[in-house]
Image (tube, rainbow, N blue to C red; front, side, top):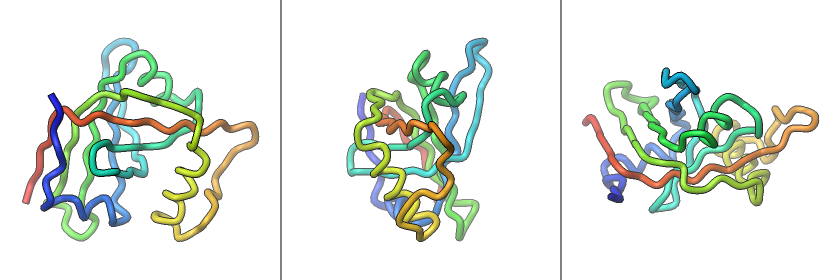
Length: 132
């Protein structure tokens, strides 16, 4: 069942607010990583590199949770639970550059490693929780 982000919390996607991405390890234990996030009005997106822990976890089990805390008020947050319904390398480099502009004010992502292959993840929103 699809859910939507309430208008009261859409601004979090315009701020330099990090998402804390929760994925599941092979033994079922949680793994959490801060990530840059994006929203297109229907899906939440994040970006990583092929082969990282979150990448391996999502490919095995697409269930994720992302908590975004307002950097101006840590008592205000948005939590999204859902599933990664698509991951692709197509457009991932452009997307990480877009996020780099938002979060670092740099047109090109400066932390690329030699041989790194970027991956773009599309999350279908199943449940949303908010505070304030």
